[in-house]
Length: 369
Image (cartoon, rainbow, N blue to C red; front, side):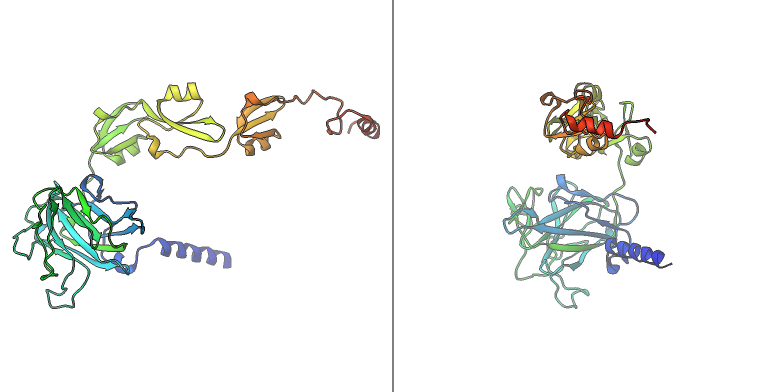
């Protein structure tokens, strides 16, 4: 009974460790950044799924050398423009967040740095809020449903186009919701300036927003054929999915990642046909359309293993299991394996045939059991 209780207790701890905070979970359907969301439309994270999207949770990270992730951008579907509201209710200590909205082409629409909650009657907050319209006189109103990009950054990093800052934050009106009134406001975002800003974790709550519906993409079937289907359909048919929106015209399902041992502990991955991978290199082929950047080649150090006078290239654990002699970091061509019959008189196995072997035979003279 006690062991069962401890098991359940450990499971409860594990579930608690991986679950979002209660305040975040209570808001409903959510999306959590599992890797870097990118900072531009081309590298943004597509928030795909089904139904309304009420929460996005993520983290901005960086170093004092300017290397890191100081902006996150997400592609979303605004399904109900009349109910649109984007808000950052939670950030970790030290993060002064800014929130931005862009159209499907990456042109700036709305931005906010600091806010006045409660319709302007609450206490000033460093956390940004974006309703569906600007308040700075630029008369931007989000009226059309469709695909948009939202971005969050740590101050003072802000979006820029080739002509300059996309948004102008007026210090005289720090709580305004800005339209694209900066020098670069007429062009799509291409960079951020300065590139470095505050870091920390954040939560974005959303109203009037839905998940992006999944789109078909190229799927390489086990037989080598390519079809354009949804990712779940591809998986159900044991296929390799190349990505949403990827056309079969740019995919060669006969080529895939091939991991082979080049020398000793050095592994290499090349895009090869299955026949070349298996026949020429006696290596592992990871399936049609698989990519080397998605594959982790094996890392054990191989070496020559002498077993019964023969030699195989393997890892030490397998060599020991066959009672072989392992030579690490060595190829079979560089080893001369001794047959077990090369020294037949060496009864005690000390490498020499002498009187000790004879005494061992006399001591055990007689009928074998």
